[in-house]
Image 1 (cartoon, protein in one colour):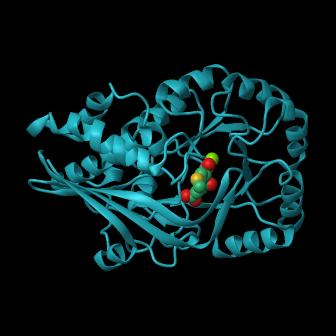
Image 2 (spheres, protein in one colour):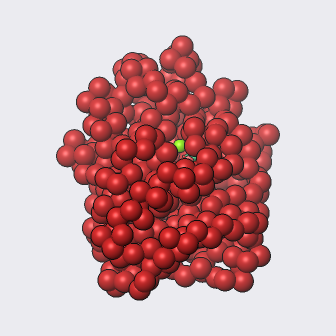
Length: 369
Ligand code: SMG
Ligand code: MG
């Protein structure tokens, strides 16, 4: 496969409601779409980075620059030999920048699979036709608004609720949700690194609420801290930001820093590494679930396919398109009986809607290869 043109298309899409985490608040989803055109196919992917380096050190402008100056030249140098399975090795000399690497590898994988007629699910090893959907509920100004939002998501059929937490918004919202909706709903929390090990006693106050897990309570480089915390609290510790490779996953499991892993392909450099993490975790009896970065239908399609692998045994942040967007860039993913259907068409299995893309495009860079 030979790349002819790569387009980097920046889009900015309004969210149906602001989404607040411990590190900031989003009102739109701004992302760079990578569109790869080859001699016999095309591929699409979206970058998970955010406009600012707050979730992780990557951000959209850095990702665009790294793609143009450092990643793409290493791939075009491969000429006709290029295929998705060579991308990781070709880009390995460039340190870090997993999200930039992931979006490029995914677009190339999509082009590869479209030309061979294989879906992402078939290629990755999906064993399910539909996957259970969870929803991530942002931090709010008051408990009443949170209870209304959670009630609405439960009415829609979501099978698991994740509450974003931070110091000052943790025990009380969890207590309120349990009191209103009972012990039977599947409930978990995500701190996005907002605590330190000194907060262990405080976090232990979540133990009586029978949470499925607490996600990334401590800084991303504090593996030892998570291992210590896991000895103090009974809520299972799940890592998100800390895991950027299969080697990280193996180390975190071996050190007792987590008993569950949130797999986000973008955070680990792409779907091939995400599948390796799935395999490492499965070998250790550690369950995984598929995270989300407010993806449009383009990124959501591939995530839903990944979530259909056998060790993705917990509901993911694979919500319906309507969770974030009134109008998605593809046909929307719709919740049916609490599940999303795994696309079966070639590649990611969804098509970009050209008029919607035009409406939300803010800039475009075309790179002839
Ligand atoms: O796609 O539903 C989604 C987002 C789920 O909470 C979510 N993601 O740390 O897991 C996470 C966060 C990161 C969001 S960055 C604004
Ligand atoms: Mg998280």
